[in-house]
Length: 229
Image (cartoon, rainbow, N blue to C red; front, side, top):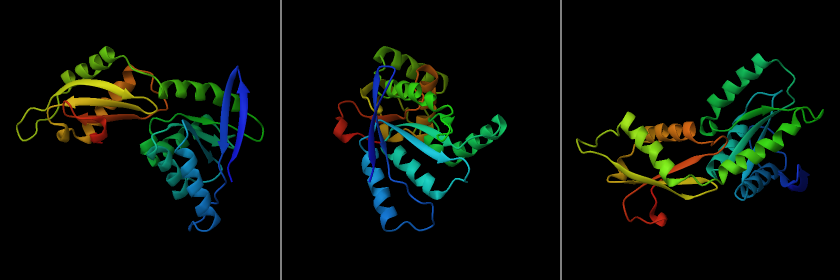
């Protein structure tokens, strides 16, 4: 079963939930399946997930599956490489491999630690604080629309069968995770590649390290319950 621990660091209280270990074998069954299901339930109630990878072993499908759960629940994420004692060049290579494998967590920073020796573990705390602030921040509406307006001016939205597609305005309606409604004339015509473009522009303009950005194209007057992912 998971283990809950409360720590205080620099006047802040952190609650860590250490999920049960899951062995990396081809078939998940029995106690491992139970552990994976428990991990999913815990992540559903988490703000910031620390995805701890054993740097002495190759990445596996199970690593990808657990990472996918963190992405599914749209959490703040830090990727932690444990047992790291190699060169910076090798670290860069492994970071590239992780980014290529876990494209859905491209926003997550990667840090290296040695839990056994305590090396660089202290760097985790300020990073958790930063990502939690990002995860719960409210972007000023006027600044948000400045960025969206400039982005659409620089790279206009593609037409839909000759018809103009417009974003009238944007508004953030939720934090943890950050959800932004894009009020449009033709919301179903917003291509995922243009969403990615807007997301990148938002990351360039605001401090959103370690957190997902969820863009919801909507018609005027459409409620959040009818949001279109």
